Length: 251
Length: 245
Image 1: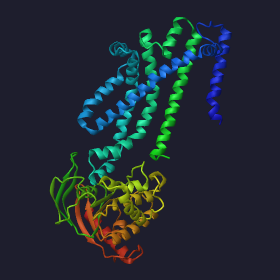
Image 2: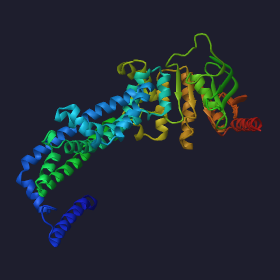
Image 3: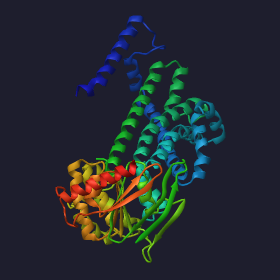
Image 4: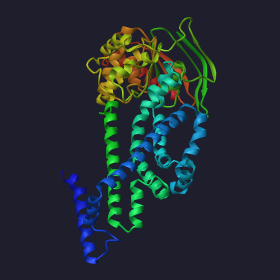
């Protein structure tokens, strides 16, 4: 129990220290707002901020879904053919090591549609853990099991479907959890890069807007919402993974 | 049933796994391949199963004996079960891979589970079972297709001694009841002496067949306390020492 309340206790302590420090050094609100001011900004326009959050989360989840489908299917393609593996793998790594802020402006110009371009950016960031984890999982069954399938005359597809895909499931799920957070990061980065030329409705855009107007409490309020969303995504996907794994037989 | 003659196998790494190995298997045999690590016993088993191919030499099945999938059962050192599948699903696997429906397979699965003493554990997942029980599932999986040839690669090596003794005795009962041919790889002299009708001694680097010994034990002499058993253990030990010298 004490371990459960530890993070809450630590958080409250930090907020208290923050408030005391602001008062002690008389820091102006346009540099660092007090926790109370941030709460005030949240209360002043909850609807606007939550709508923006919904917009960012829509981009995040669509990107996560696309990344899951693309990552898993490309991993399966790679697992079923050595040629496909040789063809795909280096490009997947190239995609992963390219910094998103460097290519986001290009994507935004090329794709045109603001929503689609944000989704593409977030998908690029979320893709790799799903792809790499699924690929690792597909290769995880011990050689003896592959021998057994061979012995009973199972072809490549039956082996893939009945052995390698189910073996990859736990790997896919842990990739999904990593990619969930990354998709949110990707969506926020893309919104920041796109600025007013983008979808102009996400939380990151609200943060930009607020910072231009020196509305620091509102900027912090948006930041708090993003952090809470990130935590919720992480715990939500972990819980989803546990439910699936229980059905998978890992009780 | 099967005649292997002049088998050579060299791995791409350069290791000479088998040199000039010849062996004849008759229907109903219980043969132990006995030797230290690296003597090519597992390679020989894989060659018989068709999971590997010789570089030279021949494997000739007697007329009408050439195996189709399901004619050979294979038990590995680890139970190698599907971790996400229940006992029943794991045993169903070989039949499923041959396109047999679950309903049609059900009586066979129930019968084989009863035979290995796993009735009541149909819905358990591998991680809920002990090592000995997992090995029983693995044996049931190998038996569910009614194989004519059962290949076992050190199946009991990782088990504790009490479980090992139980499973050895149960395996002998199964063999007598089912009448299939068993090739059993082991590095335990005691295990080979207890189980096999014929013990094939193998020596390493390169892997060769050194000698064959016929068991003097009576078919139903189930005891490890018989002087005949102790005598056979001593005979194998001397032969093995001579072969390795």
